[in-house]
Structure formats: structure tokens, C-alpha cells
Image (cartoon, rainbow, N blue to C red; front, side):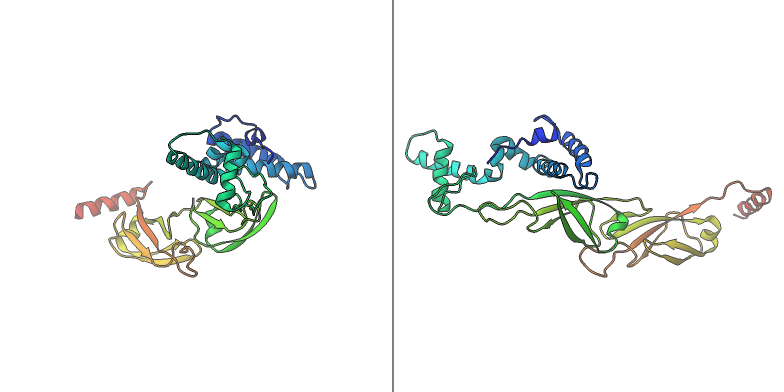
Length: 299
């Protein structure tokens, strides 16, 4: 397997931080994105390289394996397993030995019944070991409004268009797994999976906690004292609420089923919890001041 220097592809040093990797990837992805370079095969190939490098280096575990095993990083676990088995064998024999890559290839032949090795080499005897392909990681940026309803969206991952359904109620930071849309398996092994992390920006007036929504509603002093009605905006509609006389600042109300969709429970919604905030009148006229003074004397 030809060695691919992912650090060189992203133009960063091996000591680069996670932030450095993210910045480098975003800069290059914008430059070589297929939408900005239509019918440019070189740009398309470069875009795939950049995504592949980012998939490995942005994942701390994968990066650690890559730094240790290079192009053979996907088979790190199998290599280490063979290493441990050989150490165990040598300890039972009462002496220690040093083993080469070729020695470990022999152990893989016995372990898997063929010539598969953690280094991706091919041997003629027996059947080759199969390995699951690399899992790909992608990040999808959405607004809160985007996940209020179930909808379909097309993603471009490593040059491939993937059509997926985004369920209503997906949470910020949530990761979903799309089976079989990762890297190609080795020796007819299963393809890896695509792991999509959702980053959801909330620009609404509501605070979201899972399926519950929270908001503050202003009511004027007179309505708080005397009672009345107020129109409240929910996430997708308006409702009219009755305000009881003598409502205090910070009083709360609950609107059942007017919150956010419950993830993967079609038609089920959380509650909307409202906190009333009483607005004290300002810029009073002389007459209004006199009336308040009279009220104060009555008290």
C-alpha cells in the first residue's frame, strides 16, 4: 500500500492541534470544493484527498493509529493483537525474541487462515483476511428550524452524494451512523460507516432542552394586576393565553405539546414552558404619576 502523508496533504505539521487541523481542512475544502470547480477532475481528486486526510487526523484515535502505523493504521488493532499473541508465546518458551513485519505476517496467516496482514500485503497461500473499511466522520451544520420537521437532505462526502433523512428532534452534538457509507472494505470485507455529527445553531427566542422549549413573555403591569389576555408565539404558531389577576413577575405557565419534537417519535412533542416578565411602565405622564400616588396612599 502506498504511503499517503495526510499531514502534507493538509499542509500542517505533525504537531498540529485539533484546531489547526480544522482550520486547514476548511480552507482547502472551500478552495477545491466541486461546486466551485465544476468539471475540474484535478480539483475533485484533491477534494477527495483532503476529506480523507481530515477523516483520519480529525479523529484523535485514528490519528494516534496513523502516527504509529502510517498507511497500515486501519489494521492497528489486528497488528497489536498479533503482537500480544507472539509475546505470550515467547514468554511461555522462556526466552524473548525480536520479530519483524514478515514474522507478524506469518502469525496473521495462522490467525485468519490466509495471507492477510496488518500491512495490507497479499500472500498466495490460503484465503485473505477481511477487514471492515474505515469509518468516515462528517459534520452537518443546521439551524434549529431545520430539525423541527423530518426532512431529506443530500450530503457530499468524499465526492459521493448521499441522500439521507434527518429525523425531527435531532440534538446539537448528536451523532448518527449511516451503515455502509464509509471506506471500502479490505479483501471483500464490509464497508465502513459514515458518522454524522450535528451542529445545530439556535437563533430563535427559545431555549431548547431536549424536547422542551423555554421562553420569556412580557406582560404589562396593568394586565398583571387586573388580568387579561396575551398572544404568545410558539415555535410554529400563536396561542392566546389568559392572565390571572395579580400575576407575579417570574410566574410560569406550561403549554403541553407546544415544545420541540421528540426524537424518532413521530407526532410527539415536548412542552413549552413560559416565564412571565412584568414590564414596569416608564415615561409616565403627570396624571399617571398622580394616580399611582393615590394608589400608594390607599395601600
